[in-house]
Image 1 (cartoon, rainbow, N blue to C red):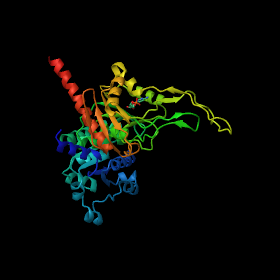
Image 2: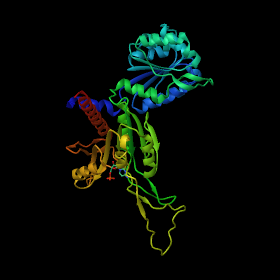
Image 3: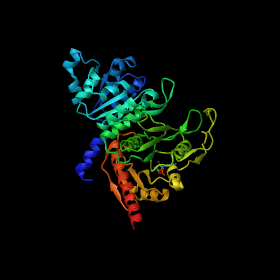
Image 4: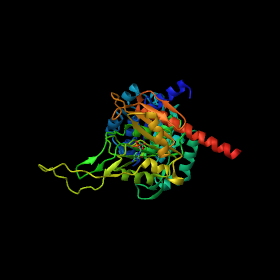
Length: 425
Ligand code: C5P
């Protein structure tokens, strides 16, 4: 990619919804409570959310909770002199990059289909010049009715995107298609709207953080890994469209939105969670897995006794997750990436690790005196393959993550081209 293009890509992807304004219309349905989670996810990704609450929507969630979570005023009334003078319905739609209706009730969908404009939400939709995404939510019988299906077909015909509804139990006690899609799925659609998603249809597995190997109920063997780099990679893969499982050791970082996060403690548990997440097209082992674990774990706290020599702890080797993934036979990920933190002979050691563990790429960290990597927001890496090594300047871990995902996309695409060439020959 050209340098300008790369810079733009990194900039756009660093905070996935930064500088984006989403107008969220919450209509009347029990699923309105899920809209609160959606607001939280958009805010977490750096987006600005403005909300319109219909009269029906306000029966299910309060303007106060919507306003507190969105950190914005909530708009409800088309005929409010104050609202219209501060932020009229025309401006509300003009200042948004995307409009989401979640939940979209059967009634509101009908209003949209027929161009009604008798309240703030419907007037804003009719006056809008922006892309619209709707997440229908209703009783399965209502959803199946010809009238509802005709309305949906009309909206789709006009370029409106629908997410869901999903199948399952509905609040009214019936089972079928009608549940609003989960907030994570709607959030993924929003991300997909703003970003190119070259990894759509791909499954990715990421390990992150340290492992804790218990010595007794209060002590463990661990390390200083914060998990920041692995979490950033999981997020970048998700933003690029992949379905991501993150297997994370103890970390203070919150579960990243849209990603299946499995929290584990020991290397053995990490391996079990990774094995369960196979098959995956991509695996990135960013975790700092403890090489050893105490041979036995004491059931009660080892007591310090006066005049006794300190206890010795016998160790056993832990499973090497990266190496095991490489040996997973038909389930071996197409792209397997390891990390290597080295103090000396960075490239040689990384290349040795690459062939010993049979992975496709090593991201090597130079642990230089005076350069903080553990716990830092920044990282300084070399990319090492069998044939080349490439030095990347010190950068934010999120930026490194986006660049790595670009590299993954390039590798997978080259693989596909090779396969196509072989088939064509
Ligand atoms: O051998 P070393 O620990 O230096 O290798 C580092 C790489 O191997 C990292 O990608 C790390 O996540 C992975 N690893 C692993 N399981 C282990 C040890 C390391 O997956 N038990």
